Length: 454
Image (cartoon, rainbow, N blue to C red; front, side, top):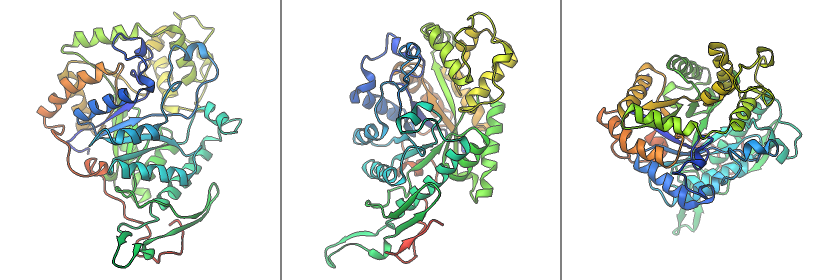
């Protein structure tokens, strides 16, 4: 069963908010995407709301086709590189966790290990790594590949990448850097371990040139929805971002992923599952509904049609807006984002909506919760008590307005019910999440030699 205290992460994917029309909203900040002052204000607002994690989603690519649609919804088209941004935010916040996406398909373990170790030190133990294999075909073209490697191969590489990265974080044992002026020894060579790895995807002989991160390892995040992705989460993840859009689906996902952990020698308590949750709160239900309807009206049909085409993996550009999608056009299975594909197909089968109705209701792995503070708190509490969540990955249609309303209205209601902290607990990010600090896998073994992966 989940813990009684709700864990909250804020997803920052577009600076102005997750809704395609967020940047057109009257409350949007012009120039927000490239403003450190804006991101600082958002992180500090989330910190005032006592969120566990400020999370930057990322893909290392801009779209180079269909620019008419992307020019109207600039998702990832103008955004900071996460590690640079998070390092800056580390000095401008005190408590909130700082998470970022980095792809195992397009990074080397040494560079990534060094970057996240540095962020963990700079933030005093608040770093988190969202492990992704990348499912965006534009990324592969940026790195000299004509296409993404096959799905299973990407996960195979990811598994090896994580193992090598963690081994590098264990180069120095805890306390190895002593700076002992009496002996004249900066570190204890017996507590220093050189990695010698020859794997299918990576070859490395060396050691990380930075002390072990304060958390041991930065918190590991994963969001795979496919069968292989769920297995990978059960093996390595400490935070899992779920894509369930109703309670029954959430309960099933929670039980399935945590149920897989035993075969990897892990206890269910070593993982927290946070389903995606988009929140529009008003002082009344009608106020929340009016806010959501006003935002939906800002979505351009070109954007809605294209976004569906992208996730359904079929060209819908020639179809009329006010007729259903013909069944013969729907692919039999997903090649990229299975969770999003399945969500669209389920909606088509259940409601047979018109194309316009479909894109106006489709929310990509989440469902928008509309209502009063009590309504929002009721639903969150229901998911927790039903065993569907340990907390939530929260998104807001429009920033900063929707988040400010959540902090002002929903957080006090959750606190009143005893479901949410009233102040930050001491310690690192993993301490606040109730996650153990991993031991050094080489502690006690002979140092200075060549360590192998377990």
